[in-house]
Length: 363
Image 1: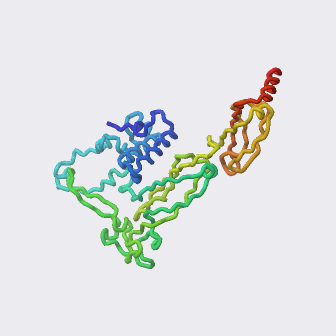
Image 2 (image 1 turned 90 degrees about the vertical axis):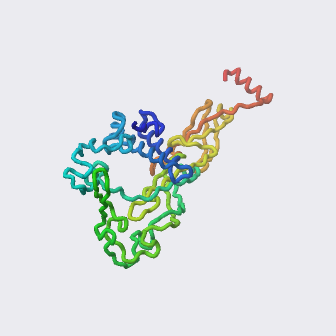
Image 3 (image 1 turned 30 degrees about the vertical axis):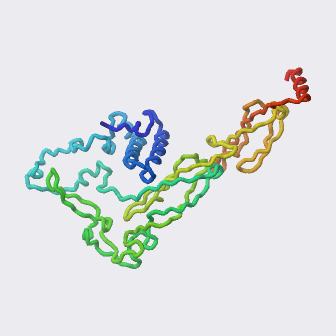
């Protein structure tokens, strides 16, 4: 039975790309295997669902047939059947291929490589790292640079990741004899199958350093503290995730993983963010609502004077242009001030007389 990718991400079938992306971010953060209580199996399932539903072609195939064909639908639950690709293995018998010789040699990567991304072996990749950071409201509005110190597997600074001692010569790898690949033969129901894989000793280069780096022992990586600069964009929302490609853990003869930064924002005492605008509530006196006046308001840019026009009503909104969230280097959103008229709880005799007079005048 094919997997229900919509159910895995907790979205409906008509979800937009943005909704799919948001659902993936939330679930990936929750189930990431590096987190306490993470679930690697669930994380892989979530990633598989996202890879299909975020791609228009794959999603269309999945919606129509319950599986994808663009990448042969890995993980669709249907299993791998060579006949699905037009190969006829009727010539195979328990002794071998066709002639009953008892063995045959071919590279499975050569046959199936085009169907699975064109490569025989997936490149090694370092582990992803996820961290949480807390920002003030102003930092989230205007953007900020944060430096964090991470203890992680990083590229060796002594040899710059080569694994070689400085000035040493490179020699032919003794494991693969300089070929960079290793042929392995295994028995299978086809007979003796010979496959090819990248040499682990030299990483496919065919050469290794004559003398290994004394710091990393030739691995090219070491565990150390590394300072990472995180650039927070202006206007980020709480709960958003920043992905820093290549800032995760390094790996020998491969590509580094990514760093995922989840942002948490402290609430502001008077402002809240609505898209590119900053919204606040302002309590004014009844007399100010009737006659107008001025109030001082402390904004993220400093104190400003807010002019209240005569005769404003409850819930009216005043707009202060250009004091909101930055849109680009020139433009900014606005400050929206929602007016609340404070009604007096007690009225003096003199005040009552004045109100009665206003009442007679039809006010």
